[in-house]
Image (cartoon, rainbow, N blue to C red):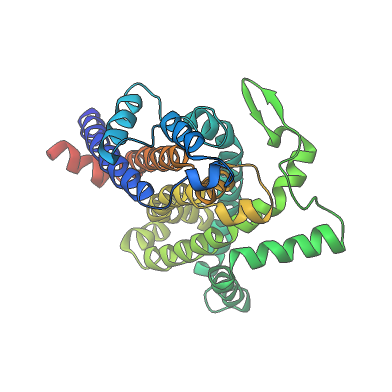
Length: 325
């Protein structure tokens, strides 16, 4: 297990280095931030001073080397717009995005797995067909449209939930989140459901497919022949085996939820990293864009490693393969 972690860590360094080059050069060739940051009425001397202060008067490779030198000591540059470290700016917004992503994934798992199990155990019933039809809607409906409909119904027409914002936060055990307050739950309910809808549909279909695949297996027939109760067969033998693909996919999807919650955060004015990156792209705030991509890449690397470790815990065959290797 330790060898796997070390090998993955070395691969992660290479991935981060390659991503830093691609993103830095990609952002460098897109527009000139001076055109946005400096007033059109500024004279050439003022423009020259601003360009030199931001380090934009150097060639692209020199700017990258300066960025790389800072990155090695944890400095990913200063935001052109906010005039503060880009990494600090992202880390300030990260808790809001992570709490939204975790709430969305918790909803997807809590609703998706039971519905998927039901649809897999009773595929030919009206309820089973209705669940699968609902999962198709979850895949098909645009996220922004669902978000707007939720706001219209639950915030405007019924007045049950707030339309935008994160809500008040509280700190317990060193963790600050809006999930510790009732108003925070009210604020996160709609954006979390909106973000969870697609993942919920995915979990339903994965769980249902896993159940249909596992039920005809010999070890299920043997467990029933031994006289085990239907509940024990379901939760001990069926459920554990369908978790393998579900955990694998959800681990990767958690990274997607964190990285690509831009639409939901924009619709609900959620103060997370997604809204920050959209504003930074519009303002050509290069350090924030590059830092954001590197932080998200690091998240994906960590999540992939975590998924592999969980996979080996759930499937003994993976552990045996590692021992033989």
